[in-house]
Length: 358
Image (cartoon, rainbow, N blue to C red; front, top):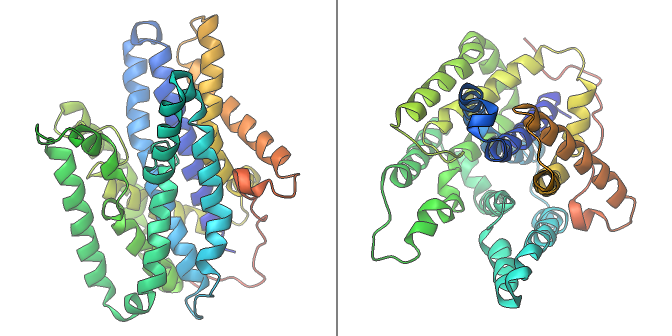
């Protein structure tokens, strides 16, 4: 087990819950009630936290590349992931479509199909992950032979060009589905995430060399997230790049800097913090469930609203995180609970020998 991955998974998960809490909190508590400066501050925090989703692309591929770097992929490689990851995605896709049945049976079933086949809810990330599972399964032998620097450069250019196209262009007026493609569907193809995949692949395959690289350039990676955050906020607040999602072009560098920073800081830890280790074990279920509890709390809050300003964001965050973990524990007491909400991960067990040598 690699403790850095536990921290990355936990921080990524917490970041996603917090940014969604901010998103709903800012809408509920109006800028006037919250205070304009407070709203701008949390809006900026939300922008910085967008590294959370792409970080999971890196984590997913890192784990596969590291686990199978000295052995062949087993025959059950895809089957296992279909069972433990894709089935819960389908279940939650149906679950999040249930409110749409209030508009009629057709609207409800249409929403189910959209959720499952094109990821029309926040679980879309799972469909992206499965594209990379398949890509790894088909091309991992070639990736081992190709020059890493070339692959990383090409994947970065493809990723950046793809995001820039949708960030800086508008859909053709003749396309009736154009707005949907530009606003959401372009998130789904792997081209918008491929750089995180290749970085994760080579970091996992060459873990020892990657660790030495992180240590060698540690000062750059310590200051890196600060610089990329300043760059993102400058572009965003100036209107130069107004996209408000994890599909911004500049998020490519920001995410990598945050990953490398967390890798270095965690490598210096003698012990893994209990809270981060605990959240990491529940991260998949939290990712699927937290938005439901955010919406649920906000629904009841709207019935009898009272102004609490930015504290509402904290309440949403704590409630959705706690309720998600409690639900995961309860559901997994059932033998087949993992099919609904995913498994609870194994606890961290420190290696007997230090894996990294400085």
